[in-house]
Structure formats: structure tokens, C-alpha cells
Image 1 (cartoon, rainbow, N blue to C red):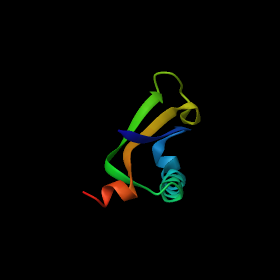
Image 2 (image 1 turned 45 degrees about the vertical axis):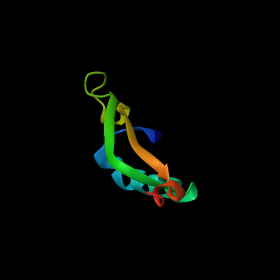
Image 3 (image 1 turned 120 degrees about the vertical axis):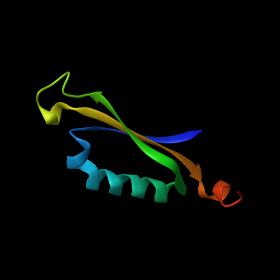
Length: 72
């Protein structure tokens, strides 16, 4: 399938509003819509750093072309 992925520094809680806007803008600009759940995967967390700003996380979600989803 087709997935949107974003890798970001810091915690999800601190970046949620900014990430939500970026995802929404990307989906609209590329005529995509989300399908299913959003997943957050820590790549570097408290096991690698004591500083929350050093954390690295990945958000990914399945997406489909709006033209394709309207046919089903």
C-alpha cells in the first residue's frame, strides 16, 4: 500500500498540533485521504537520550488517492 511517513524530533505531545497541520496540508496538496489508523514509532527515545528534544519518532499512516477511494 501507499503510506505517508513523517520523522520528527522531540515528543509527539509537544509536536502534535504542528504535525497535524503538516499532515493535513500534505494530504490536501496530493489529493490523498487517510485509511485506517495512525501509528507512532519511537526511533530514538529515553533509552538513547535523557533529553526529550533528542528523541526521534516516526508517524506513519496508510493513504489512498481520493479518486480511488470514491470508487469503493
